[in-house]
Length: 55
Image (cartoon, rainbow, N blue to C red; front, side, top):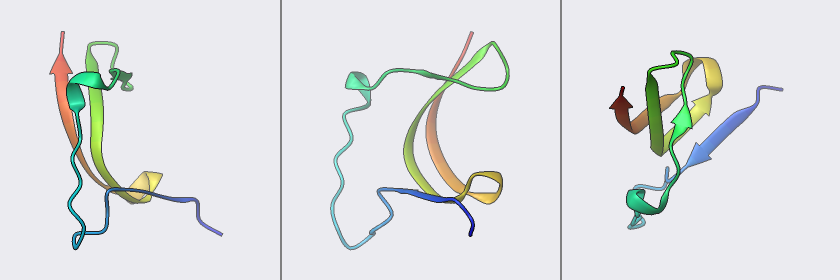
């Protein structure tokens, strides 16, 4: 069974995300950080919306 993750995928429901309160998560590149706002699907093929910070 695929490991499918979901975050804020119900488009019929209002989702308010306070990204200022979220911590930055490391990416594969050491100079890129992100905060996931929307995530749906298996990790290798997911649809993702993120705020991204480049150092």
